[in-house]
Length: 594
Image 1 (cartoon, helix red, strand yellow):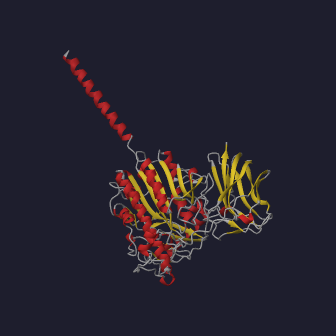
Image 2: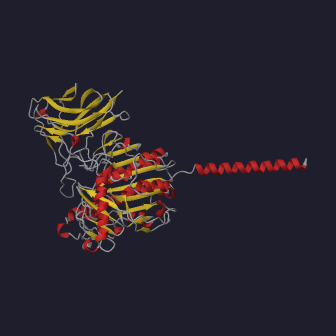
């Protein structure tokens, strides 16, 4: 009897122990994966931060990410917007991904590419992008088709107005609310609040300090009368008014970074949130940039070096400074490494997983090269040297300004780097304007809305673009039945679509009948309501702009159009122009009809 009691006690002890072990293992498996917040500034230079040594401005919230996390001293992106964004999203050099321009379809990431949002969404993350996308507008190039559950912002490149402009939310056209960066941050705060108990990925690609140089008064008033101690080494070319506007815009970014980090703290999410901050290229004008050569669009240090700060409290050592060279292509594999998520992509990754380095482990020195390319020019960076586009060699560890060419005394280094550069160009530069046969897509089965803006159209006859920079332009001078706007399109799936045309027209010119056609399908409508708002933007600009001024446009219901599957030319023209003109044109919006 006594032995039975002992056996029963042992059995109870064993089963209790097992239950506790199962519970422990279960709780471990249910641990929430860290959140990720990725800030990307637009046209902010490495030197546009207080933490880089610039005393012309104050950026305490961005600087805090450096203080409380790790910073890379030698982090590189590409010289302009779309290429950098493509590399961050895919972990691959942009030259492989179908990107070769910043507009007119050349900014699109190929559909066989896997994005960081695809990976994180598959791993159970809620994903959102709020801001400037600049890697494809029409689905399946659109962010909602590239792994993001939610998108709010503008999918084109530069935008013409930063105060309550026309934007889109998951494909539907909406009106923004106040200053754009503040508005994007509002959406980010709401997203964090709504997903605080589940893992989330928040991508905030802000649109500033890219021109037009618009910023709220409270930030401009603090900057406009400042005298600067830090000026560009090319100070004869520096436009101080432009510099002041840019730095005021960066201070506004800092304010909004602080709003996000304060929200993370208030929800006690700091220890489980990875926060990254960087910019997409060098400064958009000559201003103080640490004495580096070049600016936006240039493949030298000043055009491609960016601050890169990453904070993950109680995981990444505070104030950790890293000298190893790194690049935008490393962000995707490094994040999957930090998150312990399998890295499975359709195409091979170019970037490296630097998570061991960030977590204090030593990594093998691979003597890697990082490549920068734009507009037919390529430069290559090793840990110590840069071989520029003209094959001059600089010891960047001692000559960040690239003042002394040491190629003649280091011929062996030049030979190795030149061979690597040539091989990289041959291997990776695939898609160009001359061989790109990708049409603009319509009828993607999983999308309800598709935009075809003036940006992507071709004008014929009298029609002119409002500005040579197409991203936020409209068509004007539409006067004749012989004028037309065309798009090279591919209908991915046959369907019926409600089509709206966004136009302006003064009352005296009413009465034109416009027709949209594709093969044998045609719809037409008459412009009967006047809408002639003024151009806006100039009154908010702190310096004169080079981009198009903008205005509001009114939707005209063209009707329901049946589009057959296949490639062809979509044509918008007038079949009747009773008065002086048809009107100005901004975009077509297609809505799938079930």
